[in-house]
Picture 1 (cartoon, rainbow, N blue to C red):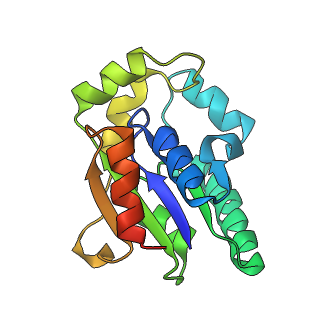
Picture 2 (cartoon, rainbow, N blue to C red):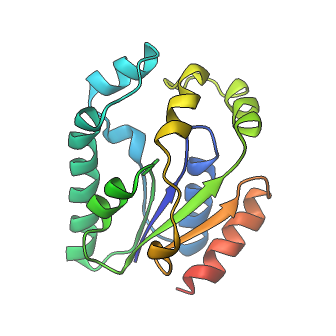
Picture 3 (tube, rainbow, N blue to C red):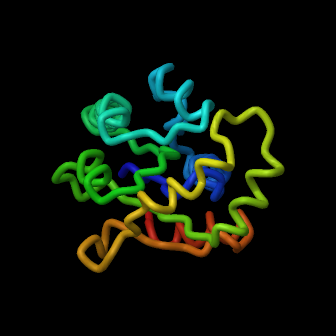
Length: 166
């Protein structure tokens, strides 16, 4: 099984994905590490990414998922996966790719982003993230779970493990 912890920048994806990977003993990939340098530079300059910008990044993530699947490995990825089309690209037709959507208000996320150091994504881009966000809906039932990111990391990881029932 592959679990993609998704949501807007600053919502806590990496914290929860690392905790989940540690709890389950699965490998972890930080999706941001697979962005082409041009994407990182663009975001650092306060310019939102387009679908064309995201395409090579999504391809790189999908390739990693396929490597894990081919090896029979489980894994956890922190990745925004904001739009349904991105999630479809990452999961393909595979039912063993699941999405854990962390949801929080803009105010909560801005507060978290203000305390973050060394990340390329400036708070000025948060509105573009919310504008692009297409939360999982009923049609994604079974492959996606939305959790309130206001819970503690321990609570979120425990709920995710319960949902995954590995």
